Image (cartoon, rainbow, N blue to C red; front, top):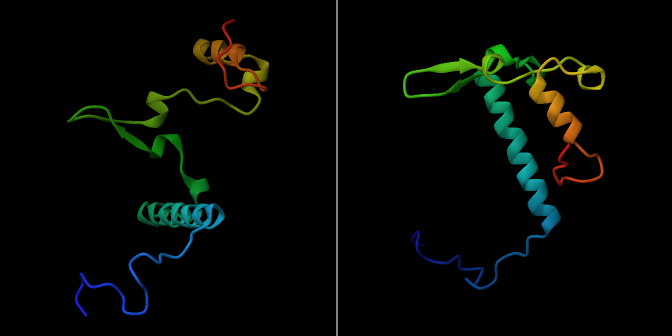
Length: 105
């Protein structure tokens, strides 16, 4: 049986029915498997060990920067108490827990 030949016990039209739940499960399993591969390739034991200074993003053909140089990070509770970064304070003021629609403050 060649690669181009259909399986002898299954006609080309009879594909098994894949439910949305099964598709979601397969996607989730594949995502976790890929995450595991990345964690191991980085020499870590858990995704919890990733830190902003340990992750890099290429910003040009010749330059990379760590995430902590590129993105604002907050301490627990900082947004509630008042963010140090004015952009985050503005975004927090525009946030609405009941809608994804942007609120103009």
